Length: 205
Ligand SMILES: [Zn+2]
View 1 (tube, rainbow, N blue to C red):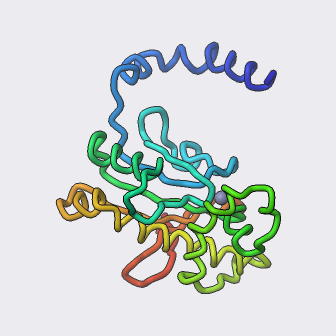
View 2: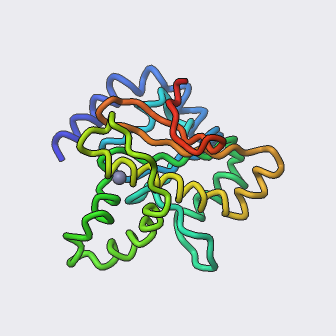
View 3: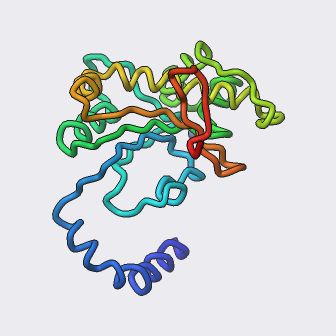
């Protein structure tokens, strides 16, 4: 814990004083423009890779950046999506997968889950990725197989996201856009799924 406490002391001494006015505004309301759905992975830092800060991104994270298929059951991801769109009125929903994702690795290898029955059940949500596997990309080197599955998972979860009634309404009313991204940890680059051509293209053009 020492490192975290030291970090918080640095925040109070060096960061917070310069942003006091911003935090005062944010202390009473938030108006994020983007809903960001990504994996719990410690190497994915949305604010760092997108240049955003407090109040910008409304984030929900879980193993494998899953959006469960819409059903009558209650789940935290769907509840977060509904709140973001209907209350916060975000303008875009972004679903972001990433390279070297442990959830897809586990789905590919089917090992090491014996003592994690809930995780095993959760990962059944990503099995649909196999149906949407993307073409192998030589740039991914020896990890090309896994990367194509991870991209496939983005395509699959994006479809689940678009099938959420609240998303369908907002898109039909022209107040929401929906995006699927793949973040490569090694290069730092983000790709966007282009539904028109059915493949991932660099976000930066
Ligand atoms: Zn992951």
